[in-house]
Length: 314
Image (tube, rainbow, N blue to C red; front, side, top):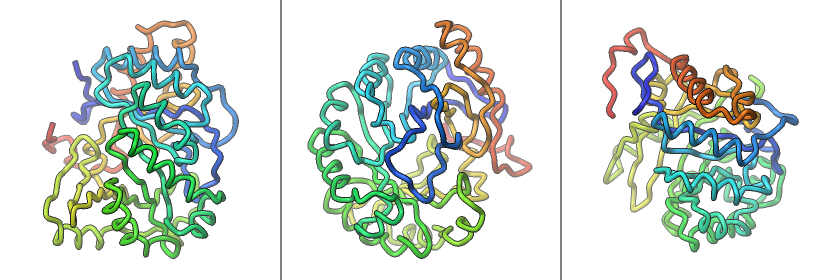
């Protein structure tokens, strides 16, 4: 059974933040919309109960995020517990700093794929954006993930005007050499100042128009915000354009869970429902009820007047 919100959007996946902690200080980080600072993290047992409830209402995909999820000392246990639920997809988004040490263990425990945030292939630019001189270590982690059989491996690149927007061709060359997918992402106005956003926002509209003309194949990922995947010279390039984009919102199929157990129905909106009491009691039935309630409360952040009349491709 799959549950739909009032805009006819099915909810098929969870994006779960495991921690607010991070060893990086990226200039553009939005902290999954939950802010920074301490907070009691969900235990591996609570996470497993949460996903058991989610699976029973038709959610079969999960992505683990942070902060930096690989900072959790029990990350192997978490992956092993969740993989035992026979999910369709189990992925992690990471800065990659610890990946070379953990990739094999996570693959053996059931992790299927990994997204790695790499803002630059230039050492100095990477350090300026992240606050960490970690590029060479991260690229070693990418190699280790490839050798361990984690796939597909996706490199997330948030484009910043005046910082890394001229590196797109370098990322495509890197992807050609390694076989990774490049995901180009527009800057989001969350967790940053308006001044920073206006200074560094780089629209991918023109670049996507060029891609559409040169691509040998174009695929639409309807379950992932309707984003397009372009095959150019053997390289897969995904474009994430969120700004004022009702198509992006129309095809959103996920709920977000904060590291301290609240449900977010949208990245751009505050947490709405606290799952912690039910999780602490081990009340799976109540967790299911609250997840279903959360789905009913979902609304698109960007929506045209005729949104409810649009036909979805599921």
